[in-house]
Image 1 (cartoon, helix red, strand yellow):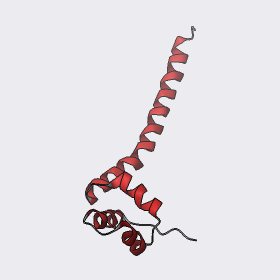
Image 2 (image 1 turned 60 degrees about the vertical axis):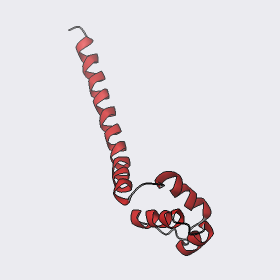
Image 3 (image 1 turned 90 degrees about the vertical axis):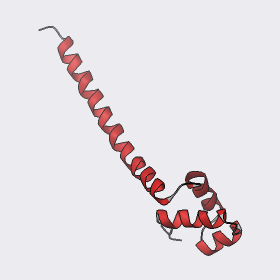
Image 4 (image 1 turned 135 degrees about the horizontal axis):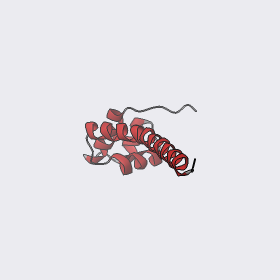
Length: 88
């Protein structure tokens, strides 16, 4: 079964329905998601607005890139220190 991808707006919309009193069973049936997916979204995005979720997603995408950059810089620094510590 192919997974359906939901936009941030759709995920927040599904959560908002439950927040205003629509029963969770009805919300997940209408959205075509599992109860597990609903509660995973709720744990991650509950109480957030669409723009906040977007910003969080952008930060999560940027984080691995920054970690890689820091790792490369640490490696460069270590190599330079190693070269400088050798006596000529």
